[in-house]
Length: 196
Image 1: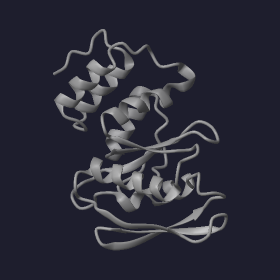
Image 2: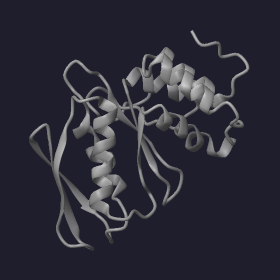
Image 3: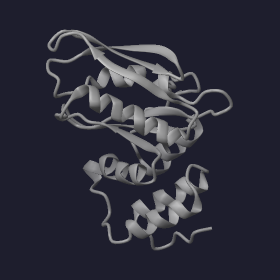
């Protein structure tokens, strides 16, 4: 096991991802090396800064809160990231953002050949509807014997990026509790888990 004494928080997070079975030992070692000279996360930006490790370790995808070049392409990028992270159990095709800019639109696509649609509310083609991503992300879970779902790691502020951690509910809860991350843990059904 990787020795984690004397490591910064970023490195300890990478080690913990490996201990939880979320990444390989090799990926953890690479991440520990990559983040070796990073300082400690700022207390007010802890979640935001630690999501960098989740992305580097390929266990979280990003939904941009600021402007994007083209909304349809940005949604397709989210789907591509999900496919890559899941490792082949989910294939998204035929992505099309239908309707007029400035009105309600439909993001139509197929998941493993099955039609899906998200209702999109956005004023321009330069931004994503982060609420639609949060509501629909469960369409992309692997399913079957794979218990992982996408847990929202919300950005802090109106134009902040949201992240989606691919993990089991138990793994997400451990990361939330041990690292103080703002993770909205979801159950196996993709719905938020209500804390007791």
